[in-house]
Image (cartoon, rainbow, N blue to C red; front, top):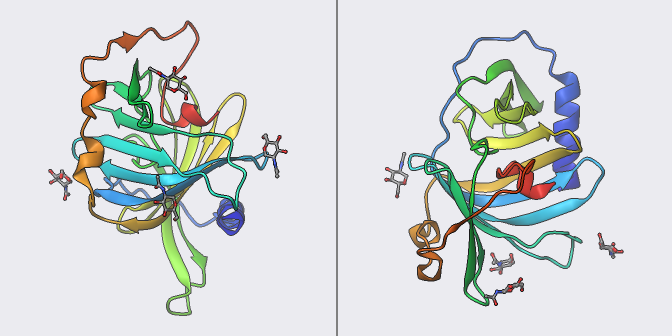
Length: 213
Ligand SMILES: *[C@@H]1O[C@H](CO)[C@@H](O)[C@H](O)[C@H]1NC(C)=O
Ligand SMILES: *[C@@H]1O[C@H](CO)[C@@H](O)[C@H](O)[C@H]1NC(C)=O
Ligand SMILES: *[C@@H]1O[C@H](CO)[C@@H](O)[C@H](O)[C@H]1NC(C)=O
Ligand SMILES: *[C@@H]1O[C@H](CO)[C@@H](O)[C@H](O)[C@H]1NC(C)=O
């Protein structure tokens, strides 16, 4: 995972190729693993996710591993289209429903993102030793946070940086499969049904990225 960070940072530094003007692409349905860390070196979470790119639903469940000292335990189900999400506690079968102030998330290239460059991580000349990515830049309208997302030519978002006021967060997207392996993960658990929306405290921004501050 540290390798992924190093890769990403060096990629940012060497992304000097001429900008082209690709339209932002749409990511496919995905199942994969995600690691989240800040640039102070804190590993916030490592987990598995399921993403429905059409219905704009995301489930992320963090996985505490002994190898890393992660600081967050999270199980969230995001309904971006409806602007709400649920924090789920399967153990005691409880649920909190909250409204989203921003639907920005690291698995989708925003439609107003600008293509900065196309670069190859690794080697462009040795077969199987390079990964060609588009680097997208933009600003989240609701939070004014800048981001940089790199995606493969097939629009798999592999890595992204989100520059928030207080911190910078790096998402790495690993072991991607372009299908929803378990659709049940995207349906609301029955114990969450009818849950009222909690009030968002003044000044709080709820978004997927902000969960990891
Ligand atoms: C993504 O998954 C949803 C739900 O299973 C399905 O309706 C949709 O067609 C899928 N999209 C693609 C591009 O496969
Ligand atoms: C956590 O990771 C382990 C090992 O990869 C896996 O067996 C387990 O199912 C994962 N747990 C969750 C909740 O995904
Ligand atoms: C794990 O993280 C906690 C809090 O962030 C810290 O107090 C603890 O020393 C860390 N443990 C190790 C082994 O790094
Ligand atoms: C469920 O567990 C969490 C933490 O473990 C606790 O904060 C919460 O109050 C519990 N909810 C219920 C309904 O017991």
